[in-house]
Length: 491
Ligand SMILES: O=CCCC(=O)O
Image (cartoon, rainbow, N blue to C red):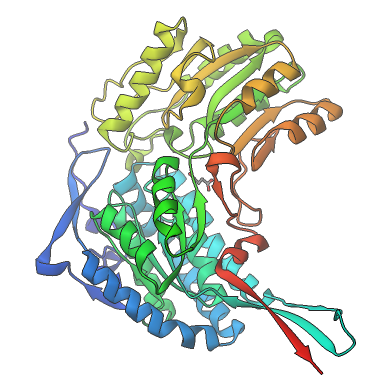
């Protein structure tokens, strides 16, 4: 563990962005009885803030106020809502350096990546500010001479979200953007490991002019109470969750009681396939970008790397050489790979590597905790990976790249699809017929062809199978926050 202390206030141009109170329906609020919890910098292990810990009664009160405010918000013109969202976007971009510093301090990812996340997060607000004005209905030729049929789209009402620690900014804006653009009121409970980025978004939302009640940030350690209130309160009509499939299943069961509309962005187990005809250097760069983004802690990170026989050794050598150029360390201090988020994450990486080597794999690069100690781990390659290993079926969520060898297209498609998950997949190949066939055969919501970077606000992000329900981003991203109403008029 590094022994430097994080004086976050001193690192910010605008220290007022470092807010530790909850933002409940437009009011900055302490936890009941002054209850709070600590936020720790995972690189340095020091406490960087103590944040209000909100209880179930406070959440219910915020929902009441969101419900009361929502109708006025929905009644504004789309252009008015769009202008406020646009102002929020502008403020995020103007404060990008500070937002990135806060994000790195609480989450650990390198500052350059954090800046990338702020731009990515802001892009959802910009995009949905534009989409607000394009919530078009339909007219349908009537089924009888006297009938006229129209379809209108209306905001679903109060939307609640639970977001993860790995993208403390962008996973909020990807949900808040469409919800607010559609005319919903929106409440988010950010991960308790990373509430400061969410609260800074609250500061900027208020400055942008979002009316009271429409946006809430609810830091809370009472995760089970949050889920129960969000799913059980009849004033909430929509739940959006990004996190593990395990928790997603629990929330879906809870939401079933009031037949709540749910969007779920859940776990992945992404295959990354390198065919013999691939550009190997490009494939190595793609693997670095998608396996080691956020130190392996994203739901779209490659988890299983399949390399065809003819290029297997060359790919392993080049990937190892590339990892050799990357510096593990403090995200605030120019590292390429930051710490893992918490001790259990380190344990999982270690467990997967030990399991792989016990089952015949060979450590080709790295393999151990970093000599920096704490939550740092060396990026690791294991060759000779097989489907019997844990990593074949479970997401590692860390800097471990297992290399599986394969012979032909049919074999690798069968291996790649042999999972309950279906979020992102990637492959590198040049043959146009192969590119088309493999892209169609992969049972995933997202396929990256000759690229390791697939995330953008303009495309529909989401998974099939047990990786989730619904899509975020793109013009489709509005649909989850809208209800269709069909009006049949007899003339
Ligand atoms: O980890 C989940 C989201 C990653 C992304 O949006 O690229």
